[in-house]
Every structure is written in structure tokens, then in C-alpha cells.
Length: 172
Image 1: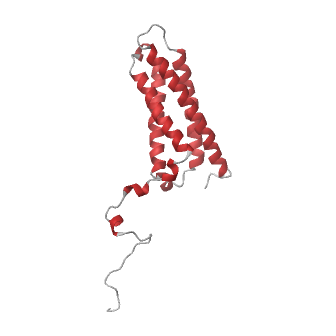
Image 2: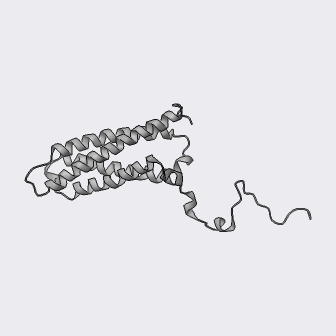
């Protein structure tokens, strides 16, 4: 028994410095290469302009026209889902869910979001009243809705290129 070492480590991963094992730097888990890419920039644009879009709708009295309920639902729901998807990708959470075909999932999400935002934009633009107290807000919301629609459309294109880069194999 004298040959047995007094300290035995059972770590199977790479060795960490003592600072990292005591909490370390949580920023080391951030996928910096993702932030430098076009999909991340598009997601940031979608999040920021989507927030402006629903804030403009929320700052009006839209209860008189029921179409703004749909516009608000689309804007807030897609803003929340895009923020979750951005954070999941930024902190490499998608790697822990390897059973999901992420390129295909992101492409489908962006395509569905583009179609939903297009319907919300058209409903918003067609329902802007004239001479109403908040017609400037609703007109600006229609503009931002159009820009976010284009951003989701461009995101769909780049997601398609990413999906085709995997040769269409959804199991990888």
C-alpha cells in the first residue's frame, strides 16, 4: 500500500488551472467566433429592431384595431424566441442538444419568422390610420416591421447556405 499515491485525480477532461477550477472565468464559455459571423449580426439586428418595433406598437392605444394584437403577438413572441436562440448559440448550449439538427432548425425558424413578420408588417402598414394621435408611432412601427422582415429573410438565406454546407445531412 505504500506505492499508492496520496492524491488521485479522476478528471477525464483537459487539466485546468487552479483559478479555473475555483470558478474561473465564465466568459471562456462564450463562442466568440459566433459573434464575428453574419448570423450573429443578423440576430442582433433582429433583436434590437424587433424591440423597437414592439415598443412602438405597445406605446399606442391599439385596442381599437384588433389587427395590432396580431402584430404585437408576432413581434413579442419572435423577439423572445430570437433572444433565446441567440443566447443558446452564444453560450454553446446547442452543443449540449446534439440530437437536434441545428442548421435545419435555424433555417426553418428564420423562414417561419420571415413569413409571420411579413403578415404582421402588411397588417400594420394597411391599418395605419390618418389623423390619429399615434399615427406616427404606427407608421414607424410599420417601417421597423419591414426592416425586421428583411432581416429574417436574409437570415433564412444564410441559414440555408449553412444547412447546404452540411450537404443536407440533418444527422450531423
